[in-house]
Length: 424
RNA sequence: GCGGCGGUAGCUCAGUGGUUAGAGCACCUGACUGUGGCUCAGGGGGUCGGGGGUUCAAUUCCCCUUCGCCGCCCCA
Image (cartoon, rainbow, N blue to C red; front, side):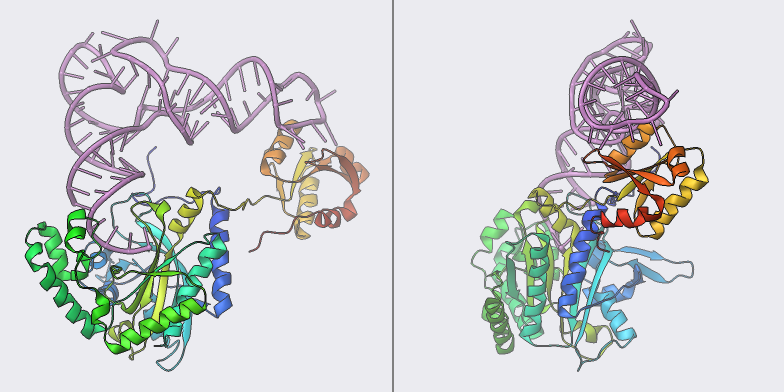
């Protein structure tokens, strides 16, 4: 085999596309319940958009981006996330304003140059929403509740949200310093690369999986002590709203997200069935991003959910729904008069009956075998006999029974037996 | 980017330093000159991931590479 999908990419084959369409359809429906409108943006953007939006020091920007130059030297990047592009489009087309509420949602591939492993690809797919224009805790709660609702619709009904508040810039700075101060005596013993990471973002000290570091940081100061009143009140109100809505959450003062733009609320949903890549989604408030992208100061909150990871959990928990996509009828051709056969099939399709055929016109046995395997519930037999008598032979593939039906009423008769069409 | 494990048919996997590399499932054909699922008989399909080395001889041993998996980092 000469060609294969590039490293970290993979094909979604016909056996699983119905599952994907189902997952996406549930997301479209959930978003509609809240009045979110879909947005689709290009696969690539100016590199600077991500550097600005996500933060220069983040791993995502410093080592995970697919950067390239086009023929005229423009610096471009395959999008590693959708929030920055969505905000760019929002500003570029004036979809809202600081005094208006704008609700956007998306389903998109994203690209990150990482070492692939289970649950982590170089191209993956995310659903997500952005609620723009509200500083209120009710907006945070809406986004979190929407997230949980999608998981529930997918059949993951016991997800628990990890919740934290990072506060605003001032308090974050103070907290960073306190953290570094606490860790100063320990930090010398850490490995070089980890030390550097801590200098870029001391919050990294908190969520390391290294046991030594975890032990050392056990008694480290936590953010909540540093939250200024406004963030404190906001955080309390978010929790109160979630309680009112019966959304389960766990406070986690160690919850840190890898993107610089978050302010105040951050949240994540995790699953044990995922292994090391245990995050199902990540989100939070980003009150400064829009201004940083050149727009007017506008508060916003959003979430991004990994489609692969949601499907992985369904799979490991054996809860994938039955989403097969079968033709309704299989037309068996037992005549050399192929044009006449083709016209019968066409008339059925014109009437909305899905019909599969064997373009190779193999033996009757073979065509019935194919009909069986296609999943069709009905075989329509068209041979010389049928064409001459103007009556099709219709076989029920489950029962094995046959009957003659006049060509004129064939389509109507098949439609009456039709299973409900797959929702599109 | 770092460390560890792996790659034999479309899929799941046997196998051996030495003739034409196997099984199950899947696929195709036939047993019925126009009838599927069950059964039976036959058939197609593999550069043993790729390259190099050791050897009289490599799918098997060694090195490199590629892809996957696990962990770290990080994240969806």
